[in-house]
Length: 103
Image (cartoon, rainbow, N blue to C red; front, side, top):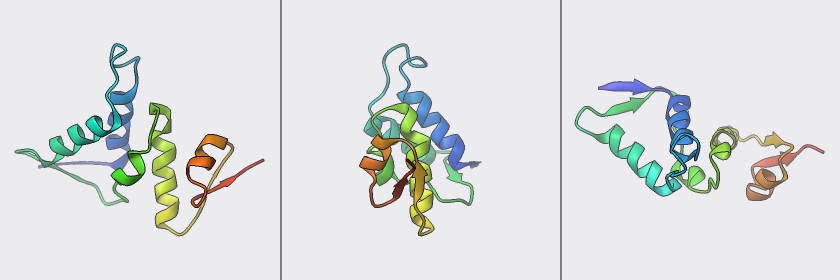
């Protein structure tokens, strides 16, 4: 088997959602997550290096590729009982229980 970091997983997910890297045919978030999870579980499946593994419950709320890393950072903060500080009102509105809006 092989190993990958959460950042590599998320970078791949971001590329799959980006219209520039997919010739204006980005995948839907559910399809991209299913594809990545299937690859990791395949014949020579991979495992995530020790870290907080990206949680599909957070990632399925992604609407644009630029949100992938923010949503993972929100997941990390929540896993450690912290809040994610952001200036992005949209992100703060999506995750009010896990964010603090910097004004």
